[in-house]
Image 1 (cartoon, one colour):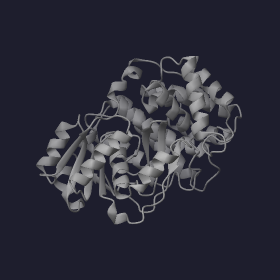
Image 2 (cartoon, rainbow, N blue to C red):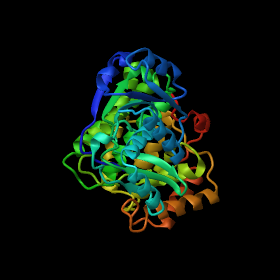
Image 3 (cartoon, one colour):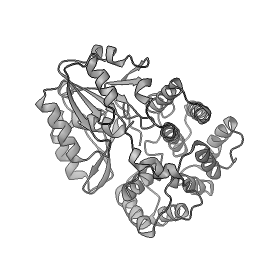
Image 4 (cartoon, helix red, strand yellow):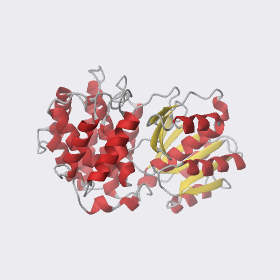
Length: 404
């Protein structure tokens, strides 16, 4: 899902390693640092610079739970924080965003708990007094989610993984530093770039014609060119560009005025990832080919066939060796970029994922409206047969998650 937020995030691009000497100019009042516990070197550099003396909370990079939010919320209250600096992958940044919001308005926590069973999406009302929310300065150490600027966050609850949307979730400051991306394995940089690419492609295919279509096509071509460069060599500036392009999928013109629920693959991948305990992009790699195949066969509920073909022609302009048909073509691209899907999908997983997708996102809800359980099961069964599932050693590295 894409979500608009009322006040634009201030985006700061820092030279490699300069963040510790600059972040102090962005904070207000008492400041705390929430950091991925695997990023000790980055933590120490921040604490040796402008954040010297700041309270610190270390988190494990894992899906955000209610317990995570209690932990971060207590950290905020006990230290009287007016600014929270978050450094880590999407889950760490989501934890900071959600905890800051729920601390400012505890009533939102009660609302979320009561409505979690009704839908996979929870849209929260804006908080009445924005000054009550601590200022958030978000520094990503991964590429792809755009959590530092997006107005949504994921939360694992007792009834499943939920997407929470609020204009108050967007970070006040998003700070990109190439140094924070340096330890991220290159395959995760490519995977994150692919996630950002599909955010644009999926939303465009699931939306009507827009005057911003050219912006979307140009952004997709920029990401594909960058991905091809990264397959050949690596450099800090390329990683920083990948992070900038990921951020642009939320802040630029490409998705302006689109159907916010247009990227239908996201909802199915979300449930498959939750059911299997794998990373979101591993699940996405399994289902995107079968979904695009359905669109190419005229299944309009998944997306528009003509718009998909037009979009894919933009990709093949950049990489002519890719299959000209979108479904096999996207599989070709994943193979070139080393992106792996699930190696196996059992029937029980197919049934659980299908039921959860319909319950949380289907029926009268706009996310998967018009798509029934038979269509979802067919997509998953196609993935299970292995026609579009890329397997390999990278598919088994779930432990890497978002740590670096």
